[in-house]
Image (cartoon, rainbow, N blue to C red):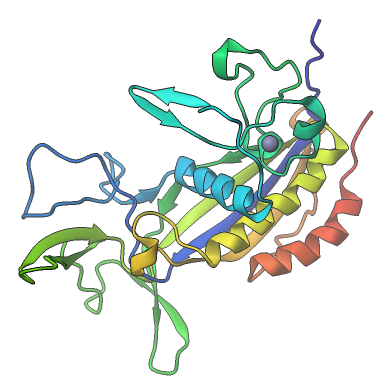
Length: 287
Ligand SMILES: [Zn+2]
């Protein structure tokens, strides 16, 4: 019989994601174009506000950590979707999996390629929630100080709700004829509310937070969404917080309060990395 993982508690990491250069996380191509836009951003269908899907953050973390640790790829595609073969890093042995910075944190299916079952695989430890757009934008005044303004502030002139329209041209190499295309982007200053939840089953899972924090820092020095090599998608995490809720907290919050009880906020991911060294001592795991 397989042993069920016993939940010890949940570690919550929240952060504001600030857009520093135009961000495009694309929606599926529409069969008709509105206002001549070729490429739209993904929007919440209820509020019409752009959002950052948790799957985009998670996919980016997986790719960045795979490269950071130069993790191997199996000799066959892992996922087949329609006619596409997708190659990703995938641990196939329990000892590899336990020490892997990617697979336990971001997950792999218990059923692998060719219908093989991996009994050592446990649920992905990290949940990446969809990140909603905040009602205010962060602007910088003439002295370089940040200030917040609502989206309908007269200084904010977006072509579409919460988005700019950027025109780019493709140049023909022989004739130099320019073919324009229009792309919708979320402008710099937009803020998204991120929440990451680390499910802790074993002491080693607490160490796995370090990989999630490293992935966030790598993302800040990489790009989110489309066209990173063309300047899009520079983002920064700010105003972060870290909280621990033990398994017993859900049954008796009075006797097992959230740790730490105060509302500590950290300006950078780096500050969280330092704070976590101290906070870790306060996180009690049961046997
Ligand atoms: Zn792995």
